[in-house]
Length: 300
Image (cartoon, rainbow, N blue to C red):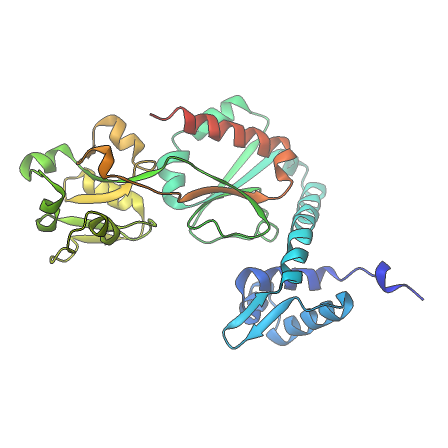
């Protein structure tokens, strides 16, 4: 009779486990895997019996990983991803040189796209695929090598390298300031303010940091993409509170300027390089990490 210690769980059960851990919801994971919630629950129960431990705490709000579940996810995540990539490589020879990156839309458009040709010129042996969305894709299911994510760095089982020295500042076009001068922070309560909804720090937090009451006027515009806010400010519509990392090209060209000195800016750690543990040893990942760090250091 086969020993229990020699028995390997099914790939389907491991996929269900990973997706339930990702979504925190059995029904959502089942939908992603195109199976029924009942089948997903059956796979989880079977996996827990085989392992002899509870992987999830279950409640009416959903499921959360137990400590054992967290450890198991940390161990099998890279294995599942490696299996998916090995399958892709054997199926498509060209996949050997593919570097697949997923990033937040504004970072991809405003920061990465103007620079990525330099990476390709330095490493022409790699075919780069870039996808952009605010969804945190699964590295194994979506075959992603590296993600540049926006948010709080609470992604378990992955290596995280936070982009340092990012700061949020009040920005406007020179034309707007010529027509609507700003002398001090309290003046902003009477100006046209454009709200960026995606940054971790927004106008309400800035007014609070200045010990100022919140503005009485409605926001001129509300945008869920930083690039929309930057474009609107460049066109002279109003003032924005945005990331200087994303606004770097606008500031360098003079299309936007800082309204106040740097001391009125706020530091933020909003963008992160995220990848499965151990992936940094792969040349395509290692070269990209080195390149992007050099690019960030070269910024003013």
